[in-house]
Amino acid sequence: MVALKFRKLLYRQDEPVDAVYFPLTCMVSLLVSSNGEARMEMATVGWEGVVGAAELLEKQGAMGLNIIQIPGVAVRVPADRFLKEVSTRPRLKRPCTGICIH
Figure (cartoon, one colour):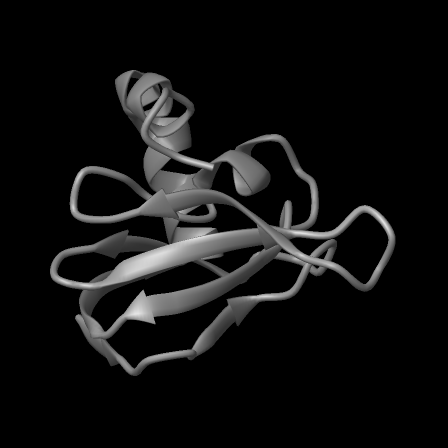
């Protein structure tokens, strides 16, 4: 578990995802930009979701700027460990690419 402070940056848009976060008491905002300047909030993820899983499973960079909106605690799983667990337990993949993630 990791304590995440307000405005902590988890990922920048298009950069590789190095870990997956399962928020427990924090809230993560996904901000995207189409022109490189103005940002719009596309999603907010809390205890019901996971951050970074879709990008890892689809082998792409972060969809947007992911920052902590409400400080708190999350479970952080390194990318290689997460991918190993999903590959050995295929049933984990479905919930990790569902509606509660980005």
